[in-house]
Amino acid sequence: MTISGSEVTTTSETVFVIDVNDRFAHLFTSVKDLLGTHEATHADPPRGLDFFDQDGHRLAPAFDDKWQLTGLVKTNEKPDPAAVQARLATVFAFLARYTAEHPTQIADDFGLSVDEALGELPQLDGRTLAESIAALSAVTHAAPEPGTQEDSGSWFHNLMHNI
Image (cartoon, rainbow, N blue to C red):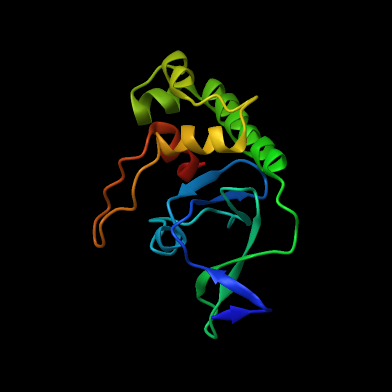
């Protein structure tokens, strides 16, 4: 499938999304992983999402004739891994603030004190995009098997889906 002269990305390279408010990020092992993932509940209000590859290229969503997401297309923008890295760091700074401000939720939902939770939160400030992706890869989970609700993600992964 070709869209506007660009090949639709369906390779196995790492892709990720960052919401437009820099409050949510999700790492995927491939576009296929992203396309196979469905939220049990939808964010309210719905999230605007920016897509990127592991090199900091912005990716645009590609749709079929029924407006179903079919893949991602590299845009003509120059990759900017430093800017993407800064956005990821902003997401995790937001999670740290949220965690500190909601100790009861962190204890009730995840059985952690604020100090324990903050100790597990990856520190992304000062890292390269590649280093941040590696840190996030170590704590993200594979897509659940079809028909299951299993989520083996870390507490902050699950927290991002709920705020």
